[in-house]
Each structure stands twice: as C-alpha cells, then as structure tokens.
Length: 217
Image (cartoon, rainbow, N blue to C red; front, side, top):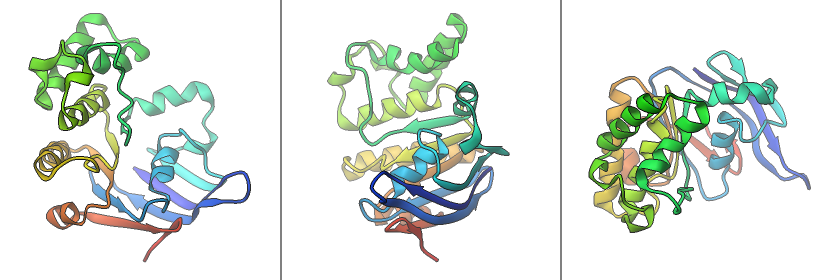
C-alpha cells in the first residue's frame, strides 16, 4: 500500500529532513509515527501526499511512484488520501457544511451526491447539528472533528493525520482517537503522527520512530 525505499529529503542549504528512510505499510494497517519536534514526521506525511517530492529514493503508493507523477495525475492520487493537518486549514468565511463540501467541489462531484456525502461525514464525527455554524464558533475538539470530516468526505482508503490530538485535552483526544479506531475497523489505512505516549500505549499499534530524520530500528 505505502512503501518508502531509501528516501532522502534535502532542502536548500543542505539540510536533510529525512535520511535513508525505508519501510512498508500494508493495506488496512494503523501505524503511529513518532519522534521529537523536527524529526521529520510532517515531511514524511507530505511526501506521501505528494505535497513534497523526495530528493532521492522512491515513495510508492498503491503501486504508483509518487515522485515521478506529473501534475495532472496528482488529483487522482489524492482522491485516495485524507489529510488532517496540524494547523487545521479551516476556512472561516464559510460554514461547517461548506468547509466539508470543498474537496468534493474540487473533484467535480454531483451536487446531490455531494450533499449526501457531506452530511454523512458530519454525522460520523458528531457535527451534523452544527452544519450551519461558522468554524470559529466551534471548540478546539469540534474544529478537529471538522477537519476529520473534511478529510474523509472523499471516502479515502488512506488517512494521514499530523498530531491530531496535540492541542486537545484528554477527553477530546480520546474522542478523536475513537473516531480513528472506527475508520481502522472498516479497513482504512491510517498513519498518525503523534508524540502522545499515552495514546501509543492505549492502541498498541506498530510504531515508526524518527530521530533527526532517520528511522530508528
């Protein structure tokens, strides 16, 4: 499903964010990505989503070498991906409903089908009753659930989450992880970047640990 083979990511000036990273993630796995701030977690997720390209090595998603994809092929790759960012990237000039609708509009979905998908996604994360609200009126935990709804509205087979519980209290964090667990149970492949040791112990999933850009044995 996801394979990194001797991946390096270098930035101008010679800084190496990732160094010789190799691993495989099978379809339907739930994996935690750990490491200190600046270890390369966000860079690794960005490579999977083709937001960035590897300097050397290969990133293969569902048999496709992401680094060699042309621009026109990227939207088709990303239809299989749900992305949850650290900084939410919510749009505060539109409603909860319209924030979730945006990925479907970009992909050209039929309006009637889009409405059904948006409401199904909001219902899944417990926000259906807030569909007309502005995101700024939501709590931190509700904003994170809105991000998850937007990420899953395309019904992706792979879900990437960058520190999804980093700014939440324990109760909200437990709610968010419960949502992820429900996706895992229906076969979605999850890669979750987290430094929360309690969550890692609770789920007992396989862990990929980064230190200064290198994958630890």
